[in-house]
Image (cartoon, rainbow, N blue to C red; front, top):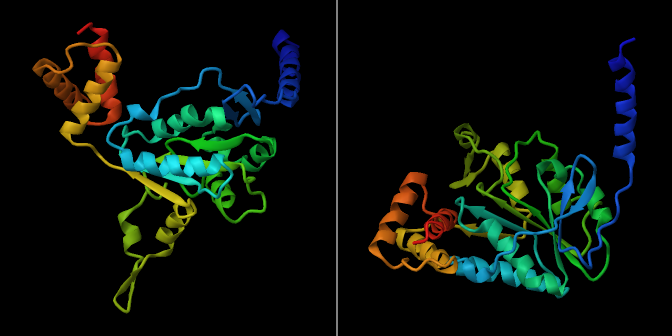
Length: 281
């Protein structure tokens, strides 16, 4: 028997012990954000959560008002909705959710980040969240599914229809570039029926809509025009200490940057401002 043959069983036993080892509960009085680890079915505190103030998120005032109102209702114990934030990439969807943590962490709001793999274990996660003074937002960023993925039925059931529902102190906030969270195909339009002058979607379309409609609040984000993009770039350049953000050179460089990236968005403006300020301009 080779040394490897004797070593492998020992490694397997060690891994089994590590997987079965209980993890320490999160101290939510001190921890403001955590990440759900699907592999170990456990919560891992995030030592330095990304915090951004809502005042830095420009040109999405209506979206900020809706999210802030819903979150404020939630932390004060009033009825509130699960939220689906959809629209163009880089327009502030995930940043707005993080801004709610920055604003309301002192009032008991906590954020738990999870990916699609973690959605399959939502009932286990619900059991780990304490029924105390804290209020928990489960944050799923950049969400998109195929109907065969295990997280799809789990999320659908958690939002509405399962016995294993979250407590009153838990909401789900999800962001996606897709309104219905799933790819849509031209062939699905052929399933539509025309009855009495009305269009009735086919079964495939109905199935896709059935998930997104379980979110009580939809908040849409839209592409920005050139002036909005430049205003955000100038805002961030000023915040980062740049002095020449009102010049023609700044405007020209910002537009060239957006052309190179193929997008005008808040994310692109922030990235340009960091480059501009980093060069000492």
